[in-house]
Image 1 (cartoon, rainbow, N blue to C red):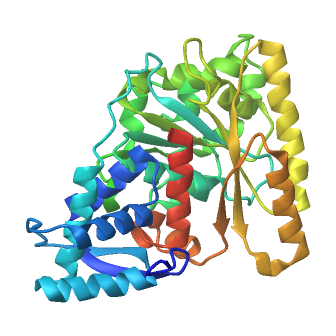
Image 2: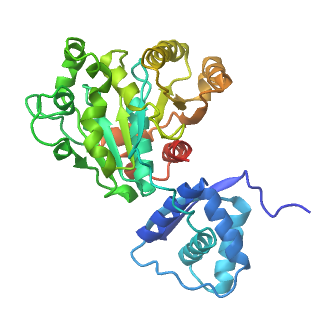
Image 3: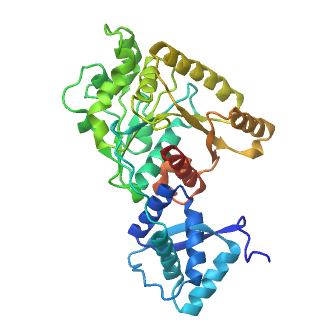
Length: 384
């Protein structure tokens, strides 16, 4: 007996759904480690067999897009017509049915360590640390996690891309708090990132150009341990306020990077893989060379300080197989490493560049694009 449709052959479908239903679907899918398109597919399959489904209030609905198998999509429209319900109502009822049949898992015991700490680092510039850290932060926040995104790069690309000014050179900043030179509370510098389904769950700590001086000042500090602990001491007051703290690191192997690596170490009593480093790379040899240097830096810290630092995985960014052998063979080499694993492959598309141009978060500018879905995949893999 042949299947009524081919699960690998999908087409994009768009419906109007209320924001709360969209958000509940995204959160539940993230909790259960399932792709949104698979969750909707399961819901539609169940809805076709169900009877007397209650009406879902779809008033005020906005655009929602996903991918359904081609044959299933056609069948859905037929059933909607037979039941005399709108296509939007059919999709809404299908999602509601899936949500009711897939309850949220039991909450995990609270972590005594506070926020999970994820740094995004690579000595090589231009590999997409900023775009990946921002996209993953938006995805975590979209799933209901209180998330803090830190621009730790004095170039401030993350801050500017999200439409915010850098902190004034004479104003309080993360660097000044790390060096004990700031007055006031660090939390006073946080700004909320608006838009999308992550609103009220995502905050940014903007960059300041004074971070260019951070390495030099750390090097001349009289405190032996401040070189590694400065970032942790500065951020410690914020940790109980967030589920995740993500750090967009500078393209550097200096003391600033040491503080970030120390910050994401596995703390005493913390489960392995709870915190760690995500390494954005490109499918090319220069990225591999840069990773070798970062790997050596991580191993030196592990040995010198007797700590554990988890390398959560690679994100191969801006990948385009049309570039030929260099790209495809490099990707194969990243996958061959095995540990750390390749968490996801971000395709070379215009969505992220356009989002930067208009100074919007990716998940606001192109919430249903392929790059956004990859960011959700990375978020899901590091959060489970």
